[in-house]
Length: 194
Image 1 (cartoon, one colour):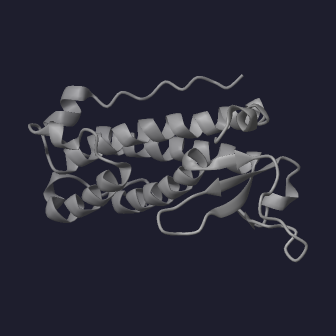
Image 2 (cartoon, rainbow, N blue to C red):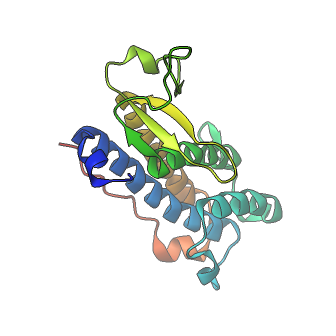
């Protein structure tokens, strides 16, 4: 947010779900580190994974699948590890809009010729009575604005959480590495929302 006044105008339920998305993605990053360590069988030298971006972790995990195929089985029920990593990439893009965007209660770019002014997240967005607008500044691109419903934000938080749990299960059940055995990939504890 650019000012405290603009943030104070945002409802608490919007701020809470943005926080859920940020927290879920932080847990996902840790699980991606574990996943890459397990795929590449990195029992030593784990320091190279610390502080790496989620992009780096996803891309190198995908590359490691090809380089270290004997270290793991590549699927869980209904999903390949590669598919899950591709899903993580998609969710990461949505997460970046939500976490790095500037949220508003009204559309900034609306005008008479384009009353919507920004792109709805999906066709269902405008069916909701609880929508919010986010401005996202991107390097060497114009600012983009999109509209999200509160339900879509909750769905994103749950999708990140579900993907993280699926990756964690693969780490525990399928990826056999001393690293995973040593750290035991404990399941996260999620507090229920009030």
